[in-house]
Each structure stands twice: as C-alpha cells, then as structure tokens.
Length: 145
Image (cartoon, rainbow, N blue to C red):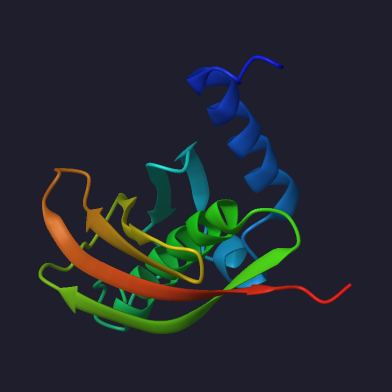
C-alpha cells in the first residue's frame, strides 16, 4: 500500500492544481492572488485600487468576486476528478469599506458533502478589520465523458 502524501505535499499539490486551473479572467483582472490553498483553508488577496466605487470605497461586488472565487475553487478541489462544482447560492454581508491597500479572504468549509458544499469566506482589510462575510453553496455534479 502506498504511503499517503504528507499534509505539506497535499498543500503543494493543491496550490499547483489551483495555479494550473486558474481563477478565471474576472478574478485575474481584479488582481486576485493566492496565498494558501488546501481543502481546509484557502486564502487570497485582492487590491482595493481598481476595485472601488466612484466614491473610493471597495465595491461590494469585488468582495463577492473574491468570495466566490475562493469558495468555488475550494469546492472543485473537494469534488475531485471528473466532477464539477457549480455555484447555486451566494450571499454577502458587508460590514466595513476598505479604501486602500489590499483585502484578504479566508475561506473555510462549513459542509463538504457528496453533492453539496458550503463555504464561508471572511474578508478583512490590512488592519485585520472585518469588511465582508460571504457564504457560497456549490452543487457537485459528475461530468459526462
């Protein structure tokens, strides 16, 4: 029987998988950058600059893009080969508006099932203050050959 990969090896493999797959052109345009990517925790950052409302506040939709990108990628890692996780519900509660620097999203699973995943993404500013909490539910389906 083969040895199970170490936690560190699994984390490297997950980051390599995420880098190969990419997060999509929208998240790329918004400056999404991976920090950490495992089944238990995904972290990414996004700059405030270029993602603001006309009055200089981080756009609420930018928080949702960061949250959905993290939650969808985490769900697809959980889904495994020959399966696809697709979003079926997302909600966000914005509690502060970042005006400069970067925001950081930390994604953790709430439920990892065979056909449904639920992730919570907590988004903070450079001072560690809560800006938004996003929750996403993904449906996992088997890809047709």
